[in-house]
Image (cartoon, rainbow, N blue to C red; front, side, top):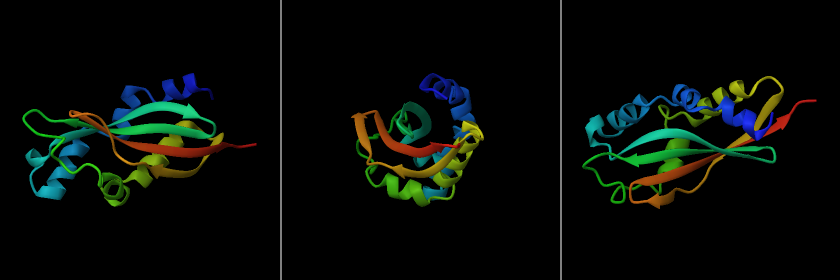
Length: 133
């Protein structure tokens, strides 16, 4: 597979299946007891392919009337890595299934939250893989 193949494999429709939009509300319901208390919506985006690595981003997009910049997003990689609703391990397994039988996932890592703007923060997700045979 090439980057173009991975890009088409991880289309916006596929990413929405892998990480459904309603997970944001479920996450905030579990965290605060009320989904309306959440300051952002979370979505999965494919960024690029590197040598034996795929790069995704968990995009945190500010909700109307909320303040993403005032929210504590820098501790989220640790929270996301363990939270059962976000289920990064399960997400990585599903991504591996989409990559096909010729690839094996060898590891994954959530990076530090990047503040792109006051309205968008990104938690990087890198997935290491090898090609079989």
